[in-house]
Amino acid sequence: MRSDALLKHEGMRILSEQLGLVEAERFIALMRREAFDYTEWQRDLFKDVPLDKLLNDAARHRQQSQE
Figure 1 (cartoon, one colour):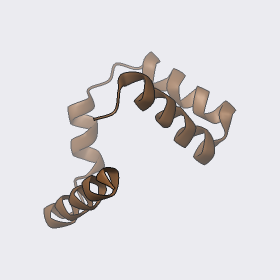
Figure 2 (cartoon, rainbow, N blue to C red):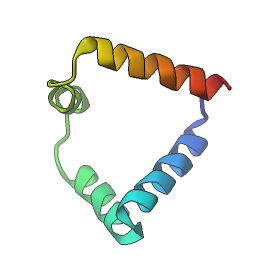
Figure 3 (cartoon, rainbow, N blue to C red):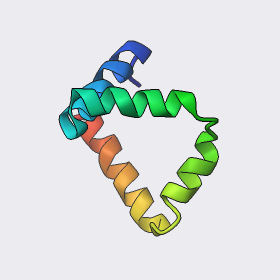
Figure 4 (cartoon, helix red, strand yellow):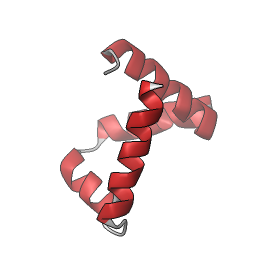
């Protein structure tokens, strides 16, 4: 498991690469400003993804992170 500092660093790097620095900062500001229920958001985010795909993706991610 990554440390909190490493997770924040990697998360910001990924957001910046995908959105650009300004949009990444804007995304973070939006997330902090709104009342946010992570469990509900995650449920909606993955509602159309079959469980077997989620499990396979999680297993693949675990294997890659251990290499």
